Image (cartoon, rainbow, N blue to C red; front, side):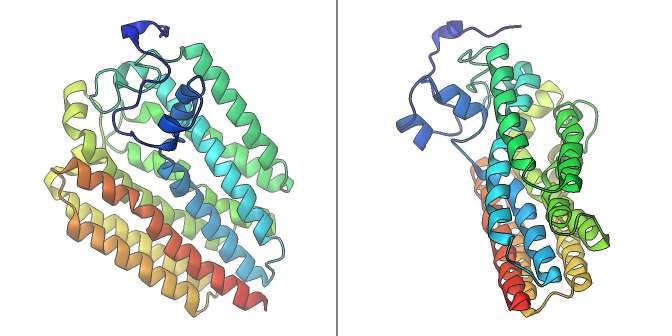
Length: 318
């Protein structure tokens, strides 16, 4: 089904219900706004959350190699890659979910269900973003290129998981944590045990924060039959978060120990753990606005850990 610009009388300047007053609404040219919204550039939190494991692994691997000369460029390339590939992934997600989004209050004003762009236009935009991501990926070694391309299979199947499993957050974790492998692939041309344990820790983190996020739509999801860990855990969400956030801290700690990390990295992990604990304490699953704020705050949790890892890497290379 194609969604034409004239559907419901909407225009390209129409705003998305759960993201207003941002730079896309006020500064971007009207013709570009639907495409920027498809990529979630009006709310880049997902890009930051995708980026954090990339930066963690880049810093930890550089510290293990006692060499940070290539780290600034790697950090920059990961930044560009995370934003464009998250944009491509969100565009694909919106294409596959366009009929479901039309049934959910929070998402029915997105560009596709509201008719601001057609499916063909969205597909073309997705390809453009993917090509930019490929250009970034080609700056790395062959092993890193192959590792990055391998993640596309998980990205492709993720939007369909909410229709068939109560655990779509696990698949999201597999995709959003892939960067925990990329730093090692770029630095060493291989993926070792330390990278795999860091990846597992990042997956646990993603399951936790995306469960909080999914509570915003739990009622609508129940009406249309969409599954999520938010619906699965329900009133036991706090206990589930303690489990998954606890696993995240423990596994990342194992990765730090395996990588011979020094005290700045451990301080970063402690700050990360305190932040996650505060989310569990503050969470009220019946308050969608609070769920949104807590979900967004994970950007800062990830940045605290990265800061510790970065200082550690610089100290070890000195």
